[in-house]
Amino acid sequence: MALVEVRKVTKTFKKGEHEITPLREVGLEVEQGDFVSLMGSSGSGKSTLLNLIAGIDRPTAGEVWVNGQDITKLSRTQLAHWRAANAGYVFQTHNLIPVLTAWENVEMPLLLLPLSAAERRKRVGIALEAVGLSDRADHYPRQLSGGQEQRVGIARAIVANPTVVVADEPTGDLDAETTEQILQLLVRLNRELKTTLLMVTHDPHAASVAHRRLRLEKGQLVEAMAC
Amino acid sequence: MLKFAPYIMKSLWRHRARTVLTVSGTAVALFVFAFIGAAERGLADMTRGQQAERTLIVFQANRFCPSTSRLPQDYEVTIRKVPGVADVLPMQVYVNNCRASLDLVLFHGLPAERLPAWRELRLLQGNRDEFDTRSDAALVGEAVARRRGLKPGQRFTIGDITVTVVGTFAAATPAEENVLYTHLEFLQRARGNRLNEATLFEVRLQDAAEPEQVARSIDELFREDRVPTDTRPKGVFQASVVGDLIELIGWANYLGYACLGLVLSLVATTAVMAVQDRVREHAVLQAIGFSSPRIFGMVLSEGILICLVGGMLGVGTALMVLWWSQLAVGTEGVTIALGPSWWLLFQGLAISLLIGVLAGITPAWRAATAEIVTALRAE
Ligand SMILES: Nc1ncnc2c1ncn2[C@@H]1O[C@H](COP(=O)(O)OP(=O)(O)OP(=O)(O)O)[C@@H](O)[C@H]1O
Ligand SMILES: [Mg+2]
Image 1 (cartoon, helix red, strand yellow):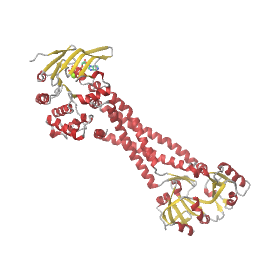
Image 2 (cartoon, chains in turn blue, yellow):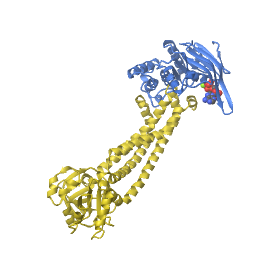
Image 3 (tube, chains in turn purple, brown):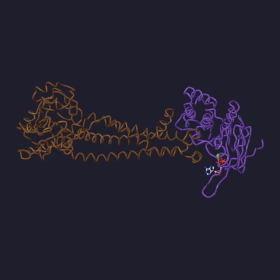
Image 4 (cartoon, helix red, strand yellow):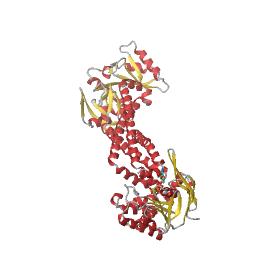
């Protein structure tokens, strides 16, 4: 069984009279240690799919299995606990809590797990080291550049050693040079820490760093040609 | 939950102007509330309890101010014979101001040798023996002593009365600590020739006696005598004397509740704003694994914290002012002591807590039950 298995997932949004169905019986398997990129036109349902896998949204029909567990069957609170231990989420912007330092932001998910203060300190240290921001631990988000803020977001996503890390257009707001840094960081984390990664992007270059490239078209997933 | 304290504190600190304003508003309101509570409590102390129910006061009929009640002292002998009466104490009362006043000075003149049997006083300063031997001696209640800065050895004049302070005392109820005890005869002389005259008699009942019935018997005895009397249980007597004040305090009570209502809406507004500001932040927290109950708890804690800090400031200040000033509202020789008490502190903090919970509950519920995806898309 694959690490992530999306089985015949349909997602329908009701907007007053009419319905939108961005995902129609979608199936997807992601293996442990994989790095998958997901492209598709705006409104094609990329974020929706990512949200289902990260457990912050529920499908209208179908199942999402992660690490042998059908997360669509969990209660709201169970799902929250599941996310704390199993899912890392990197947003496009405004990832961080503005009142907390980089260190405290990264520590947040660990506060939800049964870890000692010493263990937490160790893990936050490692995560910040991994994204190359050990020297910015005491900085607040407003004191960081866009790229640095994104790296802290990535550190927070990986700090709890989650089963899967999803990133929704993590480079969407960055310039070319910073984009390259973030992409290299993701590649390295995937290679060295064996982090399973799912990344949504509009940028073909960004998509090209992944092992597997997928496209969402008309509610269906198709494998994209390697370029 | 303690692990999240830094986040909660920093969130409050981010909007410090708002937080400080809300805290001070809460403090002011709870200050007022505690003050009103002190008055209410003083009133309750006065009319409740063994003393208030099992002691009768014999006063001249149709008189209210102590200066106008003039009973022959030999009534004492007659009252003693009434069935159910255990003991009788003649008293001369002098008050510096017969109208409602915040600084009442109240003299109680009684036979010096009978003071220990009738009043449970704990001497704080000075000498008890000196009270018995010195004719112009006064034992001063702690509240008056503090308010007027009186110490043993000092002479103290008010109106046409001058006494020598020989000691200060603490008593069971704050109201008693507003009294200066002198010799009966001293006060009779000082008030112009009123020897053999008492303002009132305190009557102690035998265990089985029925207060109302004894009171009726006493009044019956003197109906046709030189001066008719009006006898009532101490609590009832005092309550009737300060009737106007009771009404006032009852009124003030509503103002106190209005203050609490104000705090509730103030804190609720702050809590609502704090949640609206952070729709995305709460969604991000949920996305990284914060459960709904946890978010609920964190938002609620913010409101509770604001209220408790405000409450502590307000109630704390009120208690300090009350302790320091030892105020007593009085009229016609009966005082209602406004004193600090643990109960006021407890009540104030409990109410702050309750307001914090009530104010935060709806915003906290909103934040906790928000759909993550919708909230993330909101920006
Ligand atoms: N909470 C929602 N309520 C209503 N409609 C929604 C909701 N979320 C998504 N949709 C709709 O579902 C479709 C897919 O949205 P989604 O955000 O997944 O697209 P996307 O592929 O991520 O687009 P983009 O590249 O612009 O981010 C869109 O038409 C969107 O309007
Ligand atoms: Mg999207």
